Amino acid sequence: MPPPLPPPSTPPVPLATLLARTDLGLRQLAGPREGVAIHWVHTSEMADPVPYLLGGEMLLTAGVHLAEVGRGAGQEAAAALDGYLDGYAARTVAAGAAALGFGIAPVHDTVPRALVAACDRHGLPLVEVPAGTPFTAVESAVWQAVTEARHRELTRLSEAQRALAAAAARPDPATAVLRALARHVHGWTALLAPDGAEHGSAGPRPDPAVRAAAGRLARVVGAGGPSSATDTLPGASLSAYALTGRARGSRARALVVAADPHDPPAHTIAGVAAVLLSLITGPSAEPGPVAAGHAAALVRLLLGARPAEVAPLLGTPLWTVVHAERRRDTTQSTASLAAALGTPLVAPNTGPGPGTAAGTRAADKTPLPDTKKSSDAEPPPGPATGAGPAPTQRALVPAGQEVTAHPGWTLGVSEPAPVAELPAADRHAASALRRALAGHAALVRHRAPGPHSITSLVAPTDAHQHAQALLAPLADSPALLTTLHHWLSLHGSWDRTATALGIHRNTVRQRVTRIAGLLDTDVDDPDVRMELWFALRSLDRGAAPG
Image (cartoon, rainbow, N blue to C red; front, side):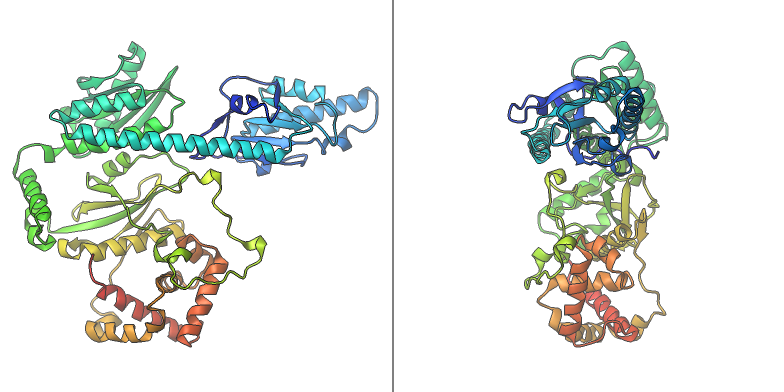
């Protein structure tokens, strides 16, 4: 049996919350009563629902599959039913299900005693669902609780981020950030050197075992090892983050946080603090010509200077733009990404992400009619989606530093570019990230055409004018232009284009059909595809920066 998948990013719902709702009338009959968390609900009357379980769900059944096994009378039939239910409970636990709900009526008047005994033996919480409570009511209650918990979680994260940002602006920023972090994670925070020496701490002092484990984690991340590390002790979850930009050895620093092991948002809040502390304690916070140059460049930019004018102050003439999206099966923090890239210049992309922008229906000024059957319809965002995916992260990396794949992240990387050309490099990195997501690759690099490419044979101005004339029928529909660009770059693959844009493949087909009609051309012709790609690339190279 394959191991259960990691739990989803949505907040769990305590089983006790469902049991406390009098309108549902649920009653627990077996299994552990404490610490049971429900992530979602799945209903199945199959004899073996295990292949369809993801882990963390409450499995609901009315016991229809027991009818065939329970036929007959006597000890032989009872023994067969006991053995069947024991195996059913054991497989359900092995698949990672959090609880089993058994519905009373229309098949059974009571929960079989053999099932109660089997769930007790295997530690599976068993809940009786009364006849008057439909399974949809249980599912609705779970999603309602998930939505409310997610709202509380996002509110807490927002408040913590504001508090940390305010703390970073105080006279002693590192100490203020540690104190704010300790308040918002309800735990202990510290800056530790690899030898375990404290360079500031806040919050209630941990017991000796937790303090010793914190020192070990600081040594791991401060000795050239991973950018972050975790450990779990009874009653405490420890996380350590290497602060980017610090020298190795005795000058290295790690942020260590000890919090409640059942508090996932604490990890996210700590990641924000790690990025701030990297900026506060890094080389840019120390006197020197590099820091002075960066400060001078920032001042001049804020006072209206052009990027090209301040480029010499940055010290590095060329920069690589990296777009990164956190994979759904990971808990890697932004701090770990910054450490892996070797730069503190990481920020969320506040604009449209790879799956949005002009590629979505909402961005099209002339919406397409949806003619697909209801069975192919795109599922509406449900409660499990929470507030949507985390934003794409953008980073600036000096061109001399190599960018490699980082576990837990999908990366799109531009070619090195001078400061004046960073807007174009930003677009190239975004395009590379979309190709990486569509092709399920860990990293994709943008490659500019070489000196002997076909584009070098045509003057850029002439190529741009030709592209504008050829694609004029699509000028008022950014969604169609974006779809055409991705469809051609992904070799006409409907599925990969749909993945890159975050839409249904039938929507991609509709858009491409409409594009062919507006352009009055055959997009299946390879010569036509080549000319359209040449035109799109010319428009991209001629796009105004910004």
